[in-house]
Structure formats: C-alpha cells, structure tokens
Length: 145
Image (tube, rainbow, N blue to C red; front, side, top):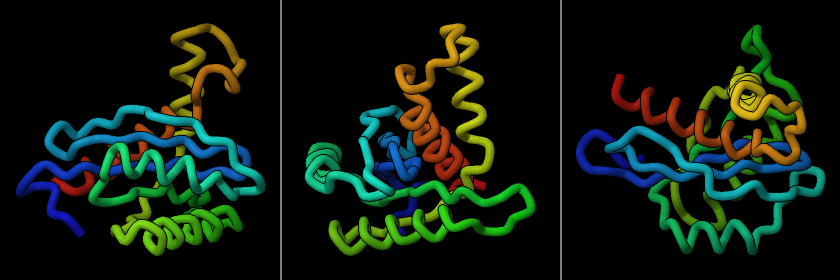
C-alpha cells in the first residue's frame, strides 16, 4: 500500500451499491475527497468501461471501497459483494484495493442533502457520490492516526 504520510497519494473511493456506485477521488496531502461520478449498476455490476475511463483520467495509486458493516460489526451479503467488487478493481487495474468501514456514511450524506436542499429526492442530489467522499476522507484520516 502507498504510504500517504510520505508523499501525496491519489486515491479513488467507491460507495458500492447494487443500483448505484458513487465515486470520489482525493489526495492524501489534503485528506479530502471530491465526487467525480455516480455510476449506474445492474445488480451491483458496473459498466467497467466507465470505471476504466475514470481510472485512466485520475490515475489513483489505491482504491478504497466502503464496507457496509452492520452496527453490531457483523457482515451482510452486501459486504461480500463490496469485497468482490474491490477484488475486481485490484485484478483489473493492478492497484491495491483497501476496505473502509462505511457505517453511517449514507445516513450522513442524506442528512447533508436534506440540510442543503431541503429535498428528500436523493436520486437527483448525489447521495452515493457524497458517501464515496466520506469513505475516502475516513480512509485518509485513518492513515495518519
């Protein structure tokens, strides 16, 4: 894994879902993520050409995939699917893929959208890509602790 403390490492974060996959990028030096895409998925399977285009554009050194653990630390079927997605990222693009606990990131992203826009129309206001930012920012923070 790249050492985010020694030089700035570019990372790409994913909020994996069966219908949508949020994508964010960021630099370890800043410790923040920026949403870059909200990709449609079909039963958890993305359009890999879209992901390839993002990887080519942003050239991340590492992938960070949110792990949707239950509040009691147990894993659901979605956790297994997120791990499989991370393994596919690693296999396709030959970069490390890290898992990051993403509990409450979707909840936080929804709350931010409601506060910002007053709407509960989450399909329009980018919950998945904001959750990807939060996952990535959490990972950056965990690397300096």
